[in-house]
Each structure stands twice: as C-alpha cells, then as structure tokens.
Image 1: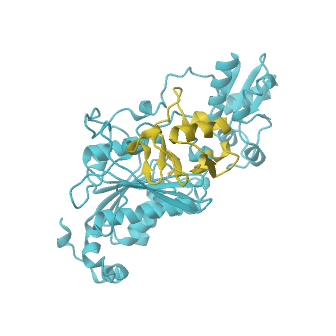
Image 2: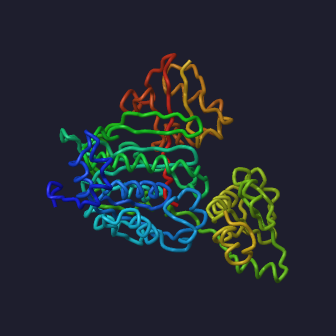
Image 3: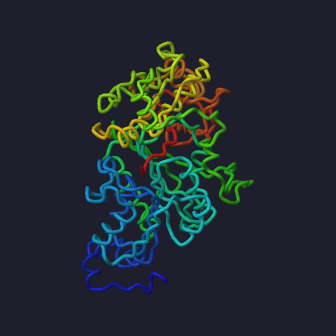
Length: 386
Length: 92
C-alpha cells in the first residue's frame, strides 16, 4: 500500500500529534512510518531501545527475530523485559510489551535463528533492517542478505564502552548507492581475538544510546527527513564522552557489489568467520561427569582461566590462572592427572587448552562444557550466576 | 607530534592510555612506533606479514587511509589518527 493511501483514526492522530506538528516531519512522514515494514534483528541490548522507539513512533509493521529466552543477566540493559519474563522467549515478551505500548501497529515475530537458509525469505518482506546482533557471522549474513535484496541496513554495534552506528546499502535521493559493512570491514577478526559481550561485558546504558540512534536512522531512512548516516561511520566512546564521524566509501574490491562481484548468494558465515575452522577437537567433560569424579574422590586438578573479579563473584575452588597468563603458568599445571579447565561459558577455557596443547604438548586437559554457568545449573545452584 | 586515539577495547594494551603522541612521517611509521612501545598491541593491529589487519580501520582525520595513500599516508604535526577495530556486540 502506498503511503498516500494511509489513514489515521482519531486516537492515532492524538498519539502522533507531536510528530505531525513538527514542520519538517508532519503528516506525510507519519504516513510513511505507518506504511513501513521494519525488521529488527536481535531483541537484546540494541533491539530493546530501538524496538520501543520504533513502536512508539508508529512504524506500521515491525518484525522481530531472536531465538533467545529472557535471562536475568539481560535485565541490566535489555529494557524491553522485566522479571516476569525471565525464561520466556524474547520475541514473545517483546511483542507483548510493544503491543501494550502501541496497539495500532502490527508486530510479527520469528522465534528462530537467522541463517543463510531463511534470511532472504524473512528479510524480503521488509523495507528496512536494523541489525542488533551480537556476533560476526550474523553481521556478515545480515549485510550480505540486505545487499543481495537491495534493503537498507541500519547498523549498530557495541562493546564494553564503545559504540558504532552507520547506515549501509542505502540509495540516496540522487540514486547513489552507499557503502556496506564489507566496504568498512572486508573480513572479520579471527575467532578468539575479539571477545564477545558475553565474555567482555558491556556498560548497560551504552546499547540504550546506540540502539536509540539506530531507531533515529531507521525513521530517517523511512521518511526521507534529514541526512542519514549513509557514507558516514559514527563512533562513541562512552568513557571519554568523545564522538567521531568518519567518511566511508564503496570499495571496488567489495565481493558483493564491487567491480568483480564473487558472492552472488549467501554463504556459510560460520566458516567465513573461522568459527568452524579446522581446530583439533579438545576433550570435554560435563558438569555431571566432573561431579561424579569428585564424589569418587579421584585426584584431579581444576584450573579457572577467568579474571580475578569473576572468581570473586563465583568459583568452584579451581586454581585461578587467567587466560592471558596460562602459558607463563604452564608449570603449575599437572601432567599426570586429569586437569579440568573452565571459564564462564567454555570459550576461553577451550582457547587455553588449545594454547597449552600446542605449545607444551599437554594431553590430559579437559574443557568443562558450559563453564561455571553450566556447573551452577547442574551441580551448585547456590553459587551466584553473572 | 601526531595524536593517535586508541579505541577502548585496545587500551588494556596501552596502560589505559587513550591518546598517544607519536612523531612519524606516515601511518606505517606511527604503527611501527606504537607497536614498538606497546608490543602487546601488535597482534591486534598487524597480521603475520606485518600489514594492518583488515578488520582494523585506520582513519587520518575523518578519512579512511584506504581512500588516501594507505600505510604511506603522510602525517603532520596536528594530524589525529583513529584506530577503529570491528566490534560485533549488541544482542546477547
């Protein structure tokens, strides 16, 4: 339906009055919002504020894709959710909250992971995508799907105290196509070099700021009001309160839409990002199996490769050797008995085991599946989860 | 001396220093001087061949060095250089 055919009820006119009376926005922009379909990928830290503002602003159709359930560690920043939603699917909790905020819009939910198999089919029905995902494979997947389908991609990303915003694959009023994520970052970092937010942390208010900026850019893309961030790359340093905006351009070597495109359909993004790299498999042990070993009184050593402040929150009595120091502390690790290595979720401990096996030839190291969080779930629920 | 701004994720390798002054003629000189003084930064900025990694962007002023003279981009006294690595957080 063309935006010109959009009509508003009396209640909607009252609701959107503060938009409609802005001279440069007005009735026309509000109609465009109601006619628009926006897909928000990820309803977590970035998705929470952007969904709230897009729903409040009157975007007519909002799609939400997320496969996660609400966890109490989400509530520090994911302001869509409350304690009553813990354990429920995020998309269902988000839909309920947004419908109570604005009953005049349609919310569609996809309680699944975005994959190379379903991305084109889901994204094709939308006018604009807002990317609030938390990992490199999905970032490249969203980018490539948007470029292949010709959809603008409003990008926001955060880590600890740093935020980034841009608008990718946007065609301006002159018909010029702007750059996309692959022009900015041609290839992802190898796994392990850049920690995820789950491991590296994020200041809760930062996604509030960056997600709100994404909502702003989505509204500008839809309405044509103002200048979008296309061709510009914004970064925010929350520690020093410094903002910088850089110019970015399309690259002739972009494999999607440069001079010699080589990517014509979606690829295996896990492999592209090296997540599935052919690493030697490491030995694993479940929390239950470890508990059984302890009950049997078997002589084992437990190494905790987390940071001291994490150890203070919760520990299972392991020897603390933070990941960065494992090589220097290799002589503290026993070679003659089973050594269980753990971290918070199992990622850093796997890295530590690879490093120790490669450099020092250890053969007796076992990664605790699910890390201390798994241990708390299965064996010691009295410990603090974080 | 030119000023180089270190992004928050890499400040743990620069003794938490956000801005570092470096005397050099071009971007390559800046990166060499930086990684010489802060050796732990090296693997985050440079690949095995010593080139700036493709997920680390370097801006001179507000321009991407890939649109200037790449690592040979000249540096002046008042130049501000920003290092901006890819980050991917948002959802979880």
